[in-house]
Length: 338
Ligand SMILES: NC(=O)c1ccc[n+]([C@@H]2O[C@H](COP(=O)([O-])OP(=O)(O)OC[C@H]3O[C@@H](n4cnc5c(N)ncnc54)[C@H](O)[C@@H]3O)[C@@H](O)[C@H]2O)c1
Image (cartoon, rainbow, N blue to C red; front, side, top):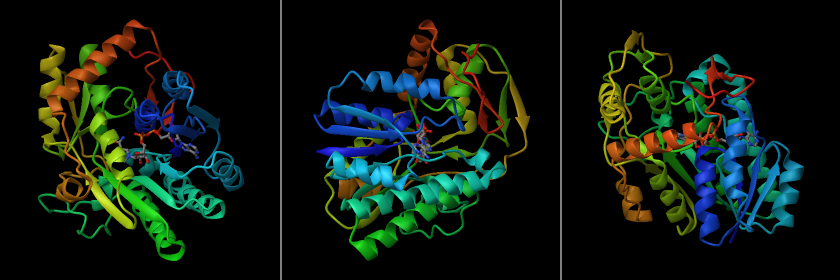
């Protein structure tokens, strides 16, 4: 199958592209190698892995350029769009909400419109657990109301789902929205907590702990997420949303303890107030994805952390840029974290 992936140079997109290429699909990746969330050198590194495949094509471009996107879809005779391009991250979205709506909502609309004009009507898109807001449900279900997002990022991801629904309703698009619960693994975005904790604990530098450490995350290892997208490709037509999450939930303090144990060093913790826009807990009911997609997460949290640490060790020995993150913006030059 010929598949167009938006945001394919990023964390999730590069892993998914690699799997699709190995399965023999033709992957056309569009990514503008944006510098806002984190630096493009890391994305170029991701692309260098994909460039080894003959069935991979990279186009540096912006998803908001509808005409170019439409041309790509026609030229390559794409049958499916996997839409991952977005600004991801709660905290920077609180600081600069317009940017998040511009890419995540208007950008999604541009992709859908280009697809309509090109006659491509099948999309799988990355949504987010953040759409559930501060729901007090023990586990979030797809049937729960998702109408009280607590950050602009969350609102933009929910809005993107709704825009996609309107294309299903009006233009008979088949759309599958995967609500991903905090994804982690090799090539993870450098500003994400797990990666920062590993880097800093390893380097014996203090870590910031927001709130009392009791917040809960249903972490999902990257290979399980990739698997969910592959399963969604076989799904029959229509519009649907699915929770995609790992096997267990972990508190912030447990997360730090697992990393301390595996790195073999104690953390120096600086406790700070809870951050605006952060959810208290994310916990998924994945029974719908199990029953309808055959999605069963395989990688336990501890095992995933061990794989991330191994990867980070290998990367640091290669002297590659690890990246840095300053107040919602990637620094202009990537540097290796000490
Ligand atoms: N990582 C997670 O924990 C997580 C959780 C839930 C949902 N998601 C969603 O999954 C998707 C991928 O997330 P990720 O963690 O891989 O992030 P990422 O930042 O690594 O990847 C996103 C990619 O999109 C590209 N991009 C941004 N704006 C673009 C534009 N205008 N045109 C073309 N490309 C553009 C970026 O350059 C980047 O390579 C996003 O939609 C995100 O909202 C991620």
